[in-house]
Image 1 (cartoon, chains in turn yellow, cyan):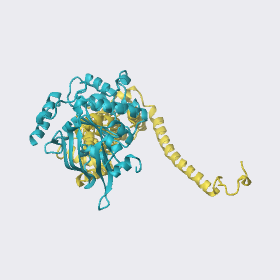
Image 2 (image 1 turned 90 degrees about the vertical axis):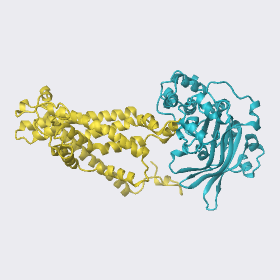
Image 3 (image 1 turned 45 degrees about the horizontal axis):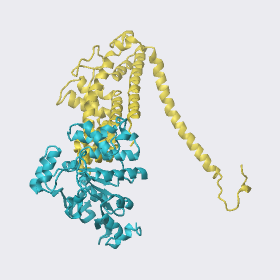
Length: 299
Length: 307
């Protein structure tokens, strides 16, 4: 430690600045850590509470039994299968439509034209529309109205697909934009058409990003409850969904139903169903992260 | 002219046979370059008077959003020559190069004026398909841009999309022509991004050769490479010019002096409205440009008085 006398006259003083500034700096850091701790503690408390309540109900028959009015017999079989069906319908719709829209906007659309900018702005806005609005849309157009499908798997899946489509489009556009222009030029310079360039070079290079976006979109769809309540998905189902025209229920709806029952045993079942949902969600997010790390291309 | 243009665009795939027909319309093209044929043109045929032109530029200009980047360029580019375009930054030499295979079409704001004749056909004539143009006029870029695929797939991509046969043979021939085969033959299935910069650039040249082009355009192909890799690419160019015509843009005057047969010198000029645009000042045999240029500005540039 040098004393003030050790500094030669005229030499720059590199010792720390005013004490006040240092305290402010420290205080700000502590405040940020505190905010982080509050957020994390809430999450941990929630998960822990659900885990404690639900863990006891997780057993083999919980997965293989249908819903029942006797808590000891009740399971999530129909809801789990319904969720899987809905995710299938949802994926089958959002992957082609979302990727095609992203390709159009990134590769073909002339950004100086007002209609293309109009589409862009609206997609951004749609991503922020509350999910219940999509429920109303699904009810009015798919379940009743022009399509009149009834409250079936197809209607539920498409409602969720519309809900998460903007997310997929935005993610796919980012993935496509991340492919450097030099790849397109290299391909075109060989005599490839624009379509060959997109199909054989740009899309394969963008697949990891697109896949990540799709999985994250699906994991948002999987937890949605409000639009499906509005669509009128039945809550009590005691059979497997058999196809697109089958009645269905899903995990969040099942949990919602159990929680509203007066018996406390049902509340435990609801916690168990939430645990299963959380497990599926974590798996999907883990897959997305793995995909991103495994196939990420550094240019 | 339009008949010949139709012939070009209707042509199915550019096998050697078909390409010969396109070229022989005016009886000036004797044969078509092939990757594997031996030296076809003897030195005697290289006599300066009887040179055949691949490109004839007549008053060519390129503008971005209406602002000219390069203007009033007229020059003939000879077959089996290496033609260098040199000049200070912003003189439009890359822009000019990209107008020779219609890569400027990819930039929506770019527009080309004047006439670019390629084997006497107007490259920008009605009915000419830019895709057909680029099949015959390949390009190597400033920064190596291999596809994020294996080495083999990089070279095979062109032949595959053009529906060519014997892909494996073509890959091997192209890699050999690009003097890369011995270095990569045991790791053809590895990702091209694992190669060194110089190897990547030779891979890009191999990729270009695999589709049997007629002309290779090179846009500062060595500017991102070290001197040893640069030397390899220059040696390669000397080999390739026996079979291909090469036009190269370079910042490096020594490189132009080493490899090229003819050199075009462009500068940036300010027009009446103070807008910068590139102009062709002098175009002649490389030796003359570097020893006894006619224009003072050329001399100042090649002697290093101005940069």
